[in-house]
Amino acid sequence: MKSLEESVTTAMDGSDVRIFPYLPYILQDLWELGTIPDTMIKLIKKHFTNYSNQKVLDLGCGKGAVSVKLSQQLKCSCYGIDAIEDFITFAQQKAKEYNVDQLCKFEVGDIREKVKDISGYDIIILGAIGPVFGDYYTTLNILSDCLNETGIILIDDAYSEDHSEFVHPLIFKKSDITQQIEKAGMIIVEYDILNTDDIKKTNDYMYDKLKLRCNELIEKYPDKKNLFLDYIKKQETENVVLESKITAVTLVIKKKRRL
Image 1: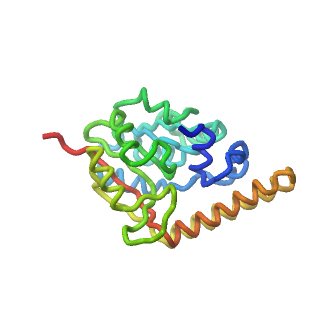
Image 2 (image 1 turned 180 degrees about the vertical axis):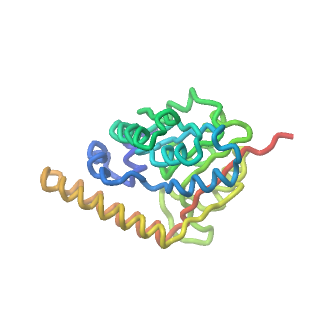
Image 3 (image 1 turned 120 degrees about the horizontal axis):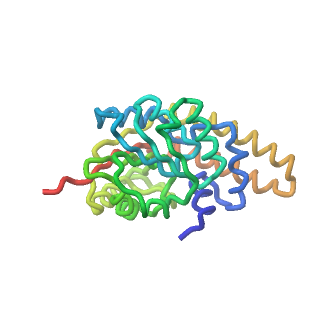
């Protein structure tokens, strides 16, 4: 198993674990870290009616943008877990700012360990965190015990088309994802595909912000210049991949009904 720092670095599109302690500084200007809260709100409203009764588990919640906005608009209770303490502190501040601190609970921790003692959730969100738990089959087997029988799992991810020659170590083929979900005893009930123009707009905004902060760190720590330049370059590469090589999607997944 990867170390916590390695896992988080990968989820943040980094390749060098030494970047881990600098992530709060690099991402300080961003609240939404990849997952679009409005997308999650739209999908939850589509698949549930009694929103305020729903319990949401936000794994790898980042700075809490999804949970805070869900609680504000749908009045549901949210429990967010993330490994970066500064992110959780920020999320707690935002919950107070949006007057949902009674509905939102945020905690620092390793989601791979925390889920072992969690159950009874109606909605589980994996928002653009990559294969932290492993492939889809492994992930869904782990999360199955956390999810109510009628609940849903929302996974913000991407896949490559079956006919595509593009290969990425963290990206699965569409058919592989479908097969793994089926093997785990679950089904995809909806594919919500992101608009390419929206992806590019978000990527450009995030890239400009993190590049600015990386350049500030280069000024402050010139001996670590290559570390920060490499992170900038990795973001450029990942943005190209996301915008032109793969399909960004939010999957709505449910357990199969037992006969």
